[in-house]
Image (cartoon, rainbow, N blue to C red; front, side, top):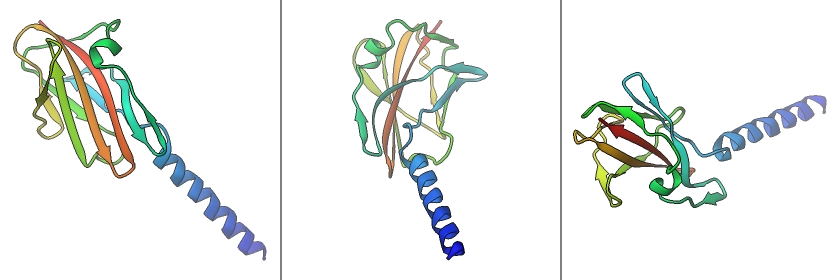
Length: 138
């Protein structure tokens, strides 16, 4: 009887741990241009049984200081834990968004000077999560 109680307790603890990992906070990527870390802000998501909608990156990040990057530099986008099934990146410099090609978890910064807003969206079996960031190319 005592062994059954311990086994049941262990099973419940494992289930709680797995549920916490599956339905905790939505994942955000680590983004960097070389050794320069680029801050990422949570954007819209549906993770577990919780969904949230956020404003467009230009509105969401209007008070943030853009991270300075070199023209044409590689910008890495990495997630800890499981790799997303699908990853999409969109960029806006003039208010309209365009798709940005992602190769081996990286994108390339524009070569033209300016301020650029990005929306990174990723999908897993558990749900989806988006993050936004802003850079300035000099």
